[in-house]
Image 1 (tube, helix red, strand yellow):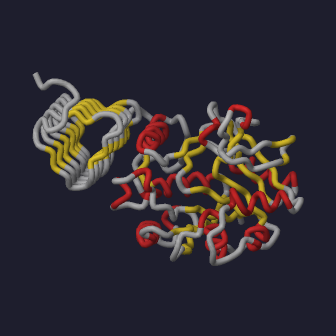
Image 2 (cartoon, helix red, strand yellow):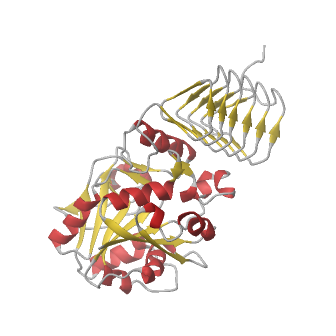
Image 3 (cartoon, helix red, strand yellow):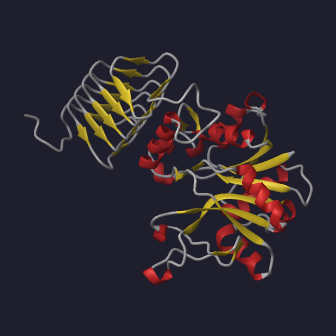
Length: 357
């Protein structure tokens, strides 16, 4: 039985204000919480048991998933009273595992959407008889990431974000999924913050242990920012990355139960339950949470509209985040990077980037 640890304890500060009321991994991506998407992908790869490493608003996960029976996997929970870093969170969650010391444990970061062949990563771990196998992906601009050079499949170093062109020795980065030998997890110090990137992995290399990198050039996206979050949801709806948890077939729009859509929804838009898109409105590549309302003739592009938020008629919302329950009056223009906090009310034409005439 293949077991997994899913790290879902982060506060999601880059996604505020959406994460004021919701843990980041429980935000709806293509119609269901992202943790449900990840659990379904893991289940399809043969994972039968998942230990959720939680912290922020931990009760939300257990209330939704229970013991996992309804989702086809056995679920257990381990809560961090204080943030423990990636390594500490893995060590803490490992107390819920039942596998033997030489068995593989698949570890996922809770904000990565990927088309990774998980079974292929496990096979690479087995073939190398590795202590850890890392999922690596290539990026066009690696300056924002730590670099992971390899010789063959053997990892040779873990490098901090490059500061100069000369420091860019590879385009391979740590993509946030690993296969650990269970006994290696048990070596991580318990009860204190530990970074796998800065402490655990470099320590294994220094000790001469076997750490391999498995490069997969398929779909990969960090959902940690609003624009990436909207894009990831749209890519699942459009079928650019497969997920068994997608409610229905891929297409231009996903419409939740009870939603009323009279306007146009395209480019992978996900419309939440009981949401309303009025006549003449255009919603493109966006995520509408449950009970959100889009007024007549409004345009919403690449944006996230929170639960119960109301967008008045004739608005333009582009690359923006509107918090739960906010009310945006008619004729407002909220453009790139704008974030409106929950419950805020804007009067008609209160914010514009162009003339109202």
